[in-house]
Image (cartoon, rainbow, N blue to C red; front, side, top):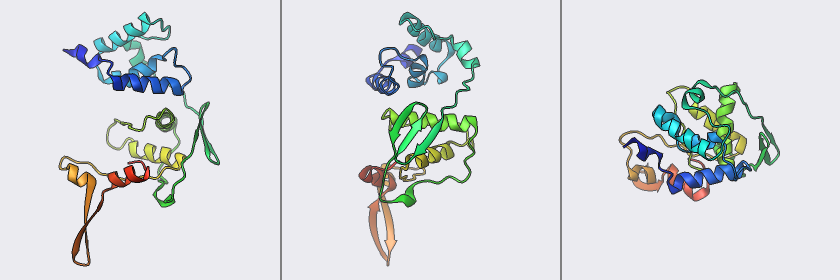
Length: 202
C-alpha cells in the first residue's frame, strides 16, 4: 500500500550518504536531508509523520511533526560568491568548471536575486557539491526553474546543452539529430549525447 513509498532503496541511501558526507555530518543526518531524499512533501501527511517517527527513534532532536514542518518557512539564504576558480556556497567550497565552449555557459538576463531565487540556486549548487548530478526541479510553469538552473550553471562555469521534452519525445530523438545539408541527410549527435561525451549539463 502507501507504505511502499517509504522504502529506503539503495539509490535513496546513496543520495543520503553523499549529501551527509558533503555537509560534513555523516554521523547524524539532518532531518531535512531525509525528507528531501524521499521527496516527503509530495507524500500524504500520515507518511510524513512516519518519516518523522524514524528521526525520533534515531535520536534526532530537530525532528518536527509533518504539520509543523509544512507550516514552517525556511528563511535561510546561503551566501554564494565566486572568486577565480573557486565557488563558495555558505561554508562549502567547490571548483568551477573550465570548458572549451564558453558560449555554451548560460548567462540569464532575467535573474533577480530574491531570497527565494537564491535558495533555489544554492540548493542546486549544494547538490552539485555532493556529486548529485541528476537533479529534478518541480514547480508551476513560469516560477523560474530554468532561470535558477541557468544562474547556477553560470556560477559554476558549466556548459549546457538544452533539450525540450514533450509527450512525442522518443529515444531516437534524444540520441540522434537528423540534419539536411546540401540536399543530403546526415545524422549528428543529439544534445543529450553531446552532453555525455563532453561532460556538459543537459
